[in-house]
Image (cartoon, rainbow, N blue to C red):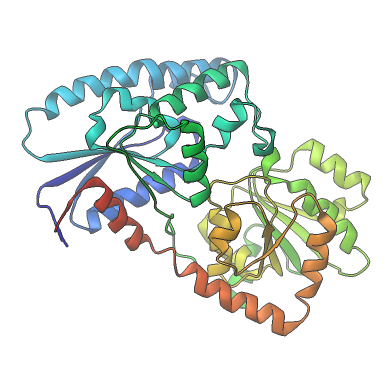
Length: 387
């Protein structure tokens, strides 16, 4: 297949003040990947007008000002820019990089717009499905309803896992576009992840005041309820007399509720927090940990799982889809409601043969998630290849 000359993709990115780091990385990865493939690419973010007057756009007045920028001002900007494009003879296509921005499809040519759906957890939570662990406010339910409405209008859509595609089709109730082209396109790596030697990861972790006197288990992610951080606290309590190690939570700072739970179990001295680690810190943490623990109740894909595998960390994860799909069988999967099962699984890794086999399979599995392959699949979905 050869690439259609003159291809031009406009990526619809997220509102920057919302600080959705993973979505920003995904958008930038597509932008660089398309350009490397020879396609002209640019990113359109919702402009920050009213949101610049506040520090946070996650709650209170800041949230409402952000909504004005995203859902009133940006559509006007889209309409104006699209009028200009009509006079250009290039082959334009559009890509909504985050499904939460699906309502922008109202202003874009549907037949030339791709949407990436990373998960439908917030949508299902808003519809009352408790197993997503994503509660929604009254306003949140209205917003998620709009997102679902426009996802159902998408002719070209990529789901990042089979689980996400299955859930989407379930929610559709068979009311889908006649020209529907919905596919599974797994995420590729948005950065370079590979193992570091002990000297390298020690020097990097010293920069975040993390001395490696004790081995540690690692969790990477937010403090959202669905991430199930409490299981690791219970797990380290169970391991207390059998393993002299700690837990490192990398991502958001530890919330008071979790700290209180650790205090009730007498394990506060076994908890480490690395807040907002940069890429080098993450690679060092993955390389240095005894095991990566990922006990989420719900996920859309689970990037940290393959990042850990690529850095040589053995992975113990939830048995909830899509994590077994993403791990490729190269992780130990357990019930996310059973900390004892996770603890027993970790102790099995003291057997070097089991540990080394899991690490080897992890390297093999992580190699499946190639960013160039992902870009080719997206270009094919856009229709930019000539047969």
